[in-house]
Amino acid sequence: MTDTARAVERLTQPHIVHLEGAEYECAPLLEQLREAISSSTGAGSGGGGGTGGNLLNLDALNLWEYIDGIVRGWLRTWGLDHGGQLAEALQRLPHAIQAQHAAGAIDDDFRERLESAFGKWVYEIEDLFDPPHQKELTAPCPECGERHHLVQEKDEDGNVTDTRQVAAVSIPVKRGRAVIAECRSCGAMWATETELVALAEAMGLEVDVAALRELAMGVAA
Image (cartoon, rainbow, N blue to C red; front, side, top):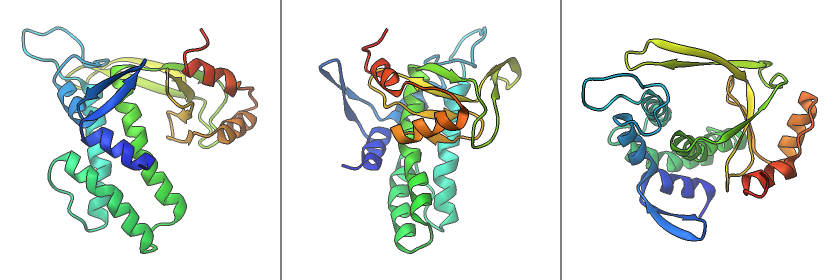
């Protein structure tokens, strides 16, 4: 099974997760995300007092709408069926990408960019429920030049309740997770060891990739 197929399976179908020697059957990640929209699970910006009922989880809602917009947007752009449930539309997208690539409408690099989105969505949904530890890099992003990124938290009415400044480029570290670096401002991502080393050189920083890998495996403290 390819990385894309595995990611699509986790997003849209019940699947088995291996954790600390045990197997667990999990609901599709999109289903978990939809349920989180009207619950307190993973809530980071939808908090506040209430007189009853569930609070709106804006983080979950924003992520759902983002994924929905990307999936249906590309299917619509290519003149394909973009209706139905999000899980159904998402399952059609990999085949559409392959067809566009085979027809010469998109090149190899763009196909890789599109296909990498599925794995990224898996991480983003998982991180909503279990946020990784962020190792922030203090130099500007070599792609967009931004050093900092503003993060806004909003209430259920969309009003900004807090604004904080974080590093634009960070490395999310999580047990069992491949080490990657990403820019919060432009969305650039560095996923391989070669890319991480090149990123460090471009930023004039020293990044101990081996130490980060150990940290992700839970070896380092």
